[in-house]
Image (cartoon, rainbow, N blue to C red; front, side, top):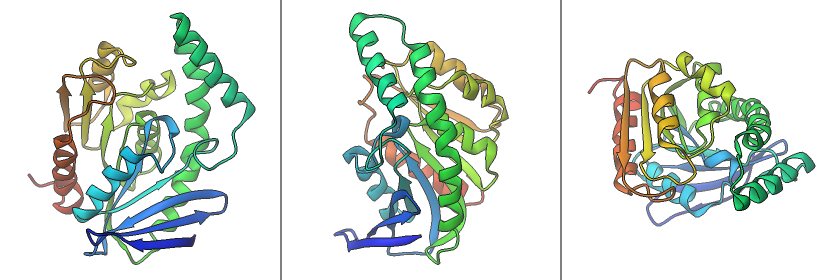
Amino acid sequence: MKFTSEQRLDDGVLEREFTLGEIPGTLWTPGSAPAPLVLMSHNNGLPKADPRLVARARYTAARGYTVATIDAAGCGERPRSAAAEQARADLRRAMQAGEPVDEIFESLIGPLVENAVPEWRATLDALLELPDIDGPVGYSGGWTALGIRLAVADPRIKAAGFFAGGYVPRAQREEAPQVTIPLLFLLQWDDEGNPRQRALDLFDAFGSKEKTLHANLGGHVGTPWFELEDGCRFFDRHLKGAGQP
């Protein structure tokens, strides 16, 4: 892991850009480091520099967590693949025409997840060698499919907060019963791109003994800001408080 830039923000958080081989990422470290780690992704591989992700990351770091994110292959700063770009073009056309889009999502999101998981695990390996990290690891983000796969594949992840707005391929829906860590699941009740019943079925399928569903009125990007505060309290219980209420 090579750090390429750093700046101290007004809230005392240290923001550093890094590369791990071809993988670009950002690390936010609180002034109280070392601290537990939260891996933070955006919906289906949107860039790590997206303002909503950066705002969530800075808030979470200011609450006493080290936060890390990376660009998935073909997203953000990384080269695009012809297959993914074609799938995105097909998706836009189908949505504009009001045609079914599930199979297009499968062809786009399925490979993204499979390619992203080894990179996130390699990043986690490198992060856990840093002195800034202490304690268990959480996952937070709108890329629920990635979070499911990571939670199943990597026992170092002890708790997860999922946003229900992104498409979850069939493979990850089938894996959902294997997810047994504590979960906080956020659902926008009127999400125009995510059928409500599908999200409720996914929540029901998770195998976790502790899982909490927060549903709010509004569309895809309307998640209330207070859910971020609730999410930090969730991580406080499971990453700082050894699971105690």
